[in-house]
Image (cartoon, rainbow, N blue to C red; front, top):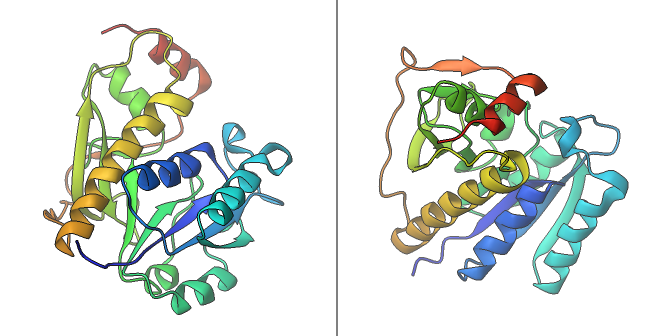
Length: 228
């Protein structure tokens, strides 16, 4: 097993918690967690950390498992986070930030590799809430592991997972999406730890695919009611 060290940039969300728990279940050790606290920031309404509950859960998890943890402003592009990342010795940093943020080059340049699990099949579905658009298009749902670059979901693909169209009424945001992204994250990181590198790296073509924007609540509701 490779001794590659791993850290996580974690927004105060349920997805970040499930990432941490999932990696722990399979014995993946985390070097450090950089929490993005949403105080003073307004992410997507369903991501707001009411009363700081999610941040506290992440901090408690880290302390109970002897993981270094520190808190920063919610903006992933803060100078403070850049300085902390530059000091971190991890070869791989997992990104679990708030939706809608684009990581700027000076943050990308502070780490060796920044791994993100995108909710959607790339390059066909770039952007936000793509699982809903895939359902409405009667298309394949999935998640894609990429190494972030300066553009929206155009980074090198290092893993992909496809799954059936959700049953009507399934909670996509807080159940299915998190479940499948976590599953893919575990598979990709396990391979990375085992081999010391990603077993597959596919460069995307900028001429392919489409970028989607946050789906309107009505479109989300229609998608959730669709059957297989």
